[in-house]
Image (cartoon, rainbow over all chains, first blue to last red; front, side):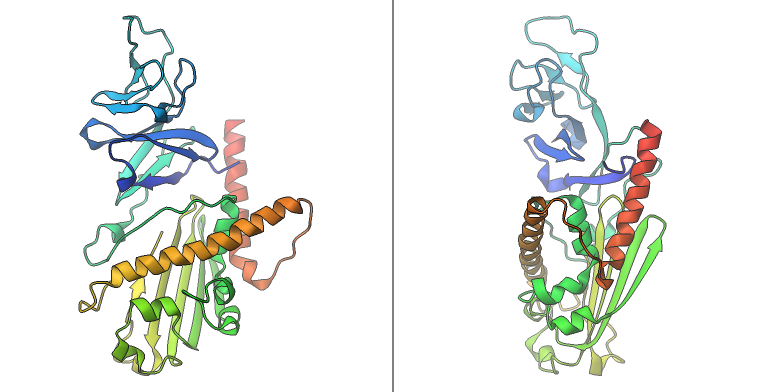
Length: 255
Length: 72
């Protein structure tokens, strides 16, 4: 069971090039493909003839062709060609899902209701002031466990010792505020005077900056999430001694 | 924002660090789920760190039942 009338992330723009993409979304088999003109289409991944997955087929100028008997479906899901016959039976179509590609994210709407708003903007992906690169991780676990993980950053001191974690006591005792805003939850944590984690040392700071004393950093984290399963992370580390002159030395976000 | 133009490799370094971080999560979450299936009826206790996750679970339960009512 999932909240259905929501936008969900189905993939990223670079996932859709010249081949159909099979994804199971909210337990439903979906085929995504980039149709002629660049528009992204999403259909139920089942040919209405004998149920072969359309994702085993191929993309053509007019739509997606089933790889079994060659039925051709438009991006809207209508069967528009059956090789060897002129007549197309009534009801020869597959379910179409509403899709919106925005800021490099391909969003899908799987509910019965019509979307009441556009898919969310994710402007950091296209804003040249931000560096952006992304990827996909598949977990053999229910979404709820991943949600839990993203909203609870106390685990950083145990799970992420080699990357974004550090002293477990600092992480578990961080000042934490939990707020709800509509259907979103926001968790804010502050960790004054902590050591910068290994990822930060490797990534963000010049060696000269790091010699200013790794023990004297202030770290702030905000995690928020929505029912559609999008978690936004904002982190900032500030050298405590320089705080007045250089309020934020780095920040980053990831979906 | 890359405020350190002298380090154009920052995006790649952050990307690699993030990928490694997600792999660390994947390891423990998949082990957690495998164990939940070995102990399907075992009760779980809450700790203070669960405040955010539990609030999110309640929101999703509310929205899930709202959809079910509309469909049913």
